Length: 394
Image (cartoon, rainbow, N blue to C red; front, side):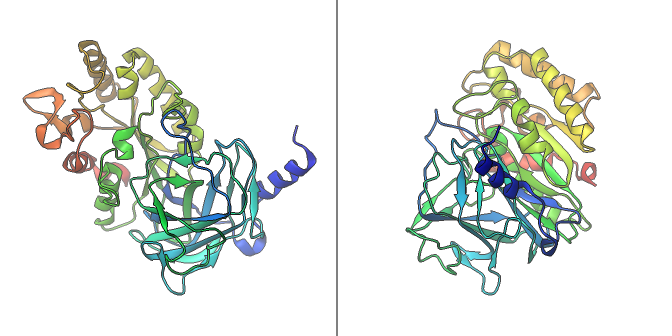
């Protein structure tokens, strides 16, 4: 039972937007991440009287945006004293004339209880696929451990003390970081983007080892392929988490996919497609093919219940990598054969063959191996993106 004050705060955070905010229409998540717990790997940061400016690559177009902030993994309420959005001019600088304040049920600030998320009102702002949006959040009081995505592989900015959400340049942001903090999604409306494609997985989807600010992950490459095609295409958002498993929660790499599915996949605005590539970490930590297949069936059922299509990605080779054994390989082959032949998925994307060594399909091709025999390099991620039949996404 909530205390009266907390209930009032929660009511503000989760009520629908007022009439002037135009909450209607077809909202589509044009950027998203998977926020998680990772205290065993790194203690989440704490912020107090600071502004964070995050620069997100938009994968969809529209004439209105709204943001979703999350305190899903916090241990206390978090107050967002001010939030703004603007088109990025590079670094922490904002494009002139694009800065807009963000409101929540008409209020300029909002307090989000631990375990909750909040969507903003609609903000009139024209954005297009390929452009970067700067989202600035002011945290006036100590946050406790932040809800974050530890490895963003992208540069974001932390200010000196104070509210700098309206500062047009980077002079007030002396520090950088490579994480997403509290920001869960950015949605667009009143535009041509028909839906959201969620790429969900582990480090191979999250982009482990890719160049910072290089946008070399396979979902980035897939988004670029779609953007180069005529017609209307779904926005590709990435909810991979390095080290994540389908079956098991870990203190280092977050809740299992089964436990985070609702928050990170099913709740996405405008969800139309899911590409699932996860399970290698489970197999290398003792899970069996039967256990993984049973979980896949549950995920497929839940995605289809939301009216979306789901495509199965075959698990990529890992011979020579950490945890690989003959037993792991046998289970991987069994899982991949089921993905390819069972007919349970709406389609199959053969990531494994795309990056395998033709002379030894248990191994990554040398040209695609980052060096740990487990993660593809940039060329490998490009090959994975090229393995996606774009006709599946029309």
